[in-house]
Structures are given as C-alpha cells and as structure tokens.
Length: 296
Image (cartoon, rainbow, N blue to C red; front, top):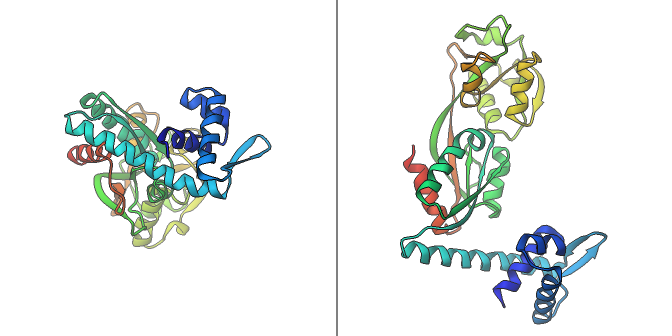
C-alpha cells in the first residue's frame, strides 16, 4: 500500500470530510478523491459513506484505519530514529496534560525543550486527568502529564513534581490576610470544586476522606470544569475554593486572591508523567520524556 494514500485516507477519517482533509494536507479535493479511489481499488472495498454533510468510514474503513495509524506511526518513528542517529531531533509530538500542568507547568518546559531542539513542534492537548489517561491508553497522545496517578494497569506513571492545594478566598473575605484556618472553619463556607475526573478533585477527596469528614462534610455549592472558571467565581464572591497553589500564585501576589492552608491538613499531591507500557516510544517522545524527568 502507498503510504501517501494511507495518510490521505487517515486524514479523511479524522476530519470526516474530503474538503477539510484537502485543506489540512494542502492538496486539492480532486487529489484527495483520487488517492481514496485508488486505495479502494487496491483493497477491493468501499472505504467511506456520505451521511449528509459528513463522510464516515465504512466497516472496512474502520478496520483499515487502525492499520493505517500503525503504519504512519512506524514511518514517523523511522524518520525520527534516523534523524537522531544523525544527531538531529525533529518532527511533531502530541502531548496531553490535565489543567494545572497543561496551563502552568508544561508551557515553559516545552519552550525550553524547543530551544534545545528548534526543529521540533509540540501540540499540547488539555483535558481532565481521566481523559488524558484514556488518550494515552488509546494512543491518541504518546505522553501525558496528569494530577492524579491513573488506575489503568497498561500505563506507567512517574512522579514529576509536587503540587500543593490551598484554600483560596477573594478580597474582602474575613480570612483575607490570614495564613491558617481549621477544617472546622471551612465546613460552613460555600465551596466551589472541580468536576469528577479532575486530579485536583481526586486529591481533595482523598485528603478529606483521610481527615474524616470527606467532601460530603463540606458545603459544596458548585462544580466547575476549569480552574479559570473557579478563579473568576471566587473573585466574584460566589464562594471560596481549594485549588493548586501554582494556579493562583500570580493573583495572590497582586492581592486579587488570597491563599491559606488548613491547620493539621496538608493537600500535597504529585504531577505524574504517563506513558503506555505496551507501546514503543518514538525517539522524539523519549527525548521529551528524558527532558521532563531531568527538569525535576
């Protein structure tokens, strides 16, 4: 099979459109159609159905797509291995990260890595820890950085760096300027938390379960799907929150928010670098993994 035809075929599957695939690959739509036609002739089966405006793979297309992904990945690995042998590291890498490491930890590390290897491009996908772990399992990303150790046995998780959760209150709150509160102080306060699946949420639940009351012993008034949304809600006086200290350091320095710790209760967790135990890593992925672990 022609790898270029497989590349075109895979892009049509991923974009669900001949025209979007043509745009992504910088080809004409007629060229895309011709590649798919020739591939269908070779395999002896129709690969796509048109359902309204969407182009979807047939059962034969679904079957071929899995093999196409593996072949294209192997080609990329071969190219990167040869470049590494020649003293060069280049190419593209897709990395997944949960909210806190994705927004506050990885961007400067990616910048430093690209200074060392300027021919590299890295795409960063951000979701909650559970979804990033699933993406690594499914092979949609080679490497993930998450805020909770994943449960899947097929994943290897290595500690990257510690993180601390702190109580965050807005200006004007009675606790503004204090450094400590007790768990008993916290219980009647309106609390905003992350959604289930978030590493911050899991760390919070674990610490509170060990302390006794559990999350159910606090007055949770809202769940939100991003740290940014929670910070805006706290600033607006909706309630207080418990979140990563890394996420609010700048606001606390400028007096826009205030951070406190809970007496006799430390919310300390780790960020983990996650890879699949059963998949070989591309040379670029291995280089980035080595770089992350060396930065600890």
